Image 1 (cartoon, one colour):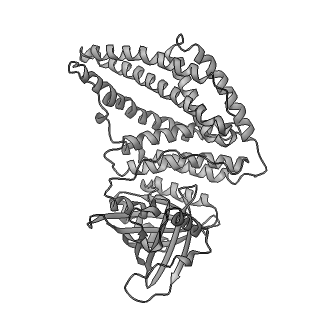
Image 2: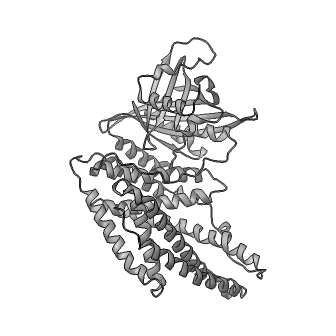
Image 3: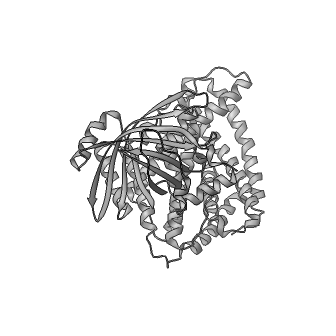
Length: 495
């Protein structure tokens, strides 16, 4: 079976309200779930998106194998009840999953890594009290599962780390996945819950490795198996969601060092903008509220990027030339980004994108418009940007910024539609475009820093020194951008 579920997290003070809600839906009894997660010493399973556990459910023991799919909300899952009596944890029996697709993923991994199943041992375990209720709505059956308890992880030095758990899972038992989304939206509005993609296994992995959080998630290469509009549209949106949601989930834990997670979140949102421009070619658009929220959050995240430039590049450069002390603003002056990422509007926005993906995948597979329209759109973007690039040294900064945004769109579109390109020349073409994007990004950072410095000048005359350095860098990077653009536009397009 494929499991589809959404996990929602909440402040501890909301637990009693949510417990009353689940009780009112029929969740009168609590069940203790003790699970033991198996992996190698190097966490080969977790690193490949595979989870293998044995869980005690009441008096029964159930062995479960899960494997990742292209969506963060859907996984291959196979459960087998074990014939075991006693308090001890049963021995693993991988062959019980032999007839399930998840077993294929596990077998390939073991063979690739040359691993013996005997290398698998308990790396973390959970002790959870679950209150569950079945809910019928709009022809679907859902399970609300309110979990509280802890995860115990075993670190390499033999020590243990305890992580508390408080979360609500909404799992689809039968019916349309979009009913899950509707229920999640209702809970976000009523209780201020947040979507969280972190599984208990992932949290155990983080704790067992002594990490503060999971690594930032970068965009992965999109492989297009089917070119009809339904599959292609859903693939574009899922590719963006799989970058946006995990990074937002980590930041929302109160992560102290979040710069790279924040950067990857911004990249994911920019890719989403590009994806929606492509989907606009087949008349698929954001709602007005979703578009407004995307622009709002993107602007808030942009403030962190702007001040990161001052902290990471300008300050060290000024220190290297013994510049006078000056009152420059810092990214540390900004609030933790969880303050707006946890807001209801952003959470509802994320749920709307998931819902849109689920809707698009149900379109008629006979419709195949997007591929040809997207390739024509690439032609238009390439042609329009070339005109600006040829006159880069004489146009205004406003037009340079426009060029930068258009080339970002070209870059992300090419990453989406790689399978429609000439594979022999694709890598060099994208690498050249990447150098252009980096140069234009540096130039834009300097322009923004100059603007911010000018605003601070009246309060600190020493800022003039910083402005002098920035203007010199502006001249240098402008020429660097022009050279990168000329090299790029000498290349033949790859689509």
